[in-house]
Length: 155
Image (tube, rainbow, N blue to C red; front, side):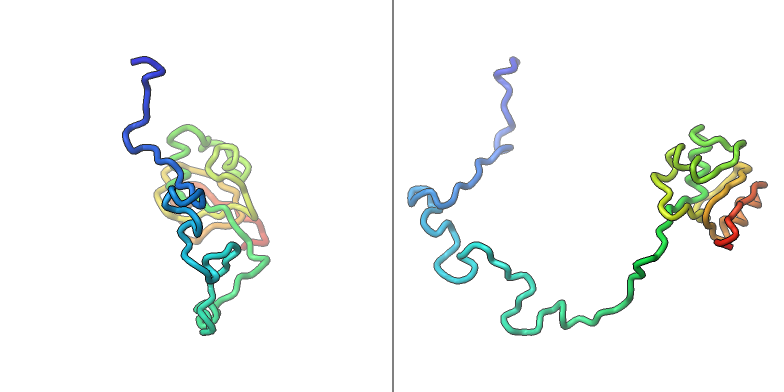
């Protein structure tokens, strides 16, 4: 086989349908849009319009509230921590801080802080300093012989 003999598989490429290119194409004149009416013209915006009826998005009740100042935490689980310690990316003997977690790649970025959750199992003895942690996560870390340090404001 030579470079100039290489071809795509049969049916892998389709030629683009060229509309409005004369009657011989089968899609000439109206270009498959039919005759007259809003849909035959350009700039159609029919989304959400139901012909005078109250649109669905206005018939449905509005519920809930999104706080504009809500804090967004980077979340880590105990199982993730253990996996990173096992793979040698995180040092269990050193203090584990939020910066160390970002450096090791456990979390991508800190956002408003890092929150520790209890999913998975932790076997290593760790001293962890994070913004927040669930009660069960703190208990699991202490059970493994470590401790969780939280800032005074989060407690």
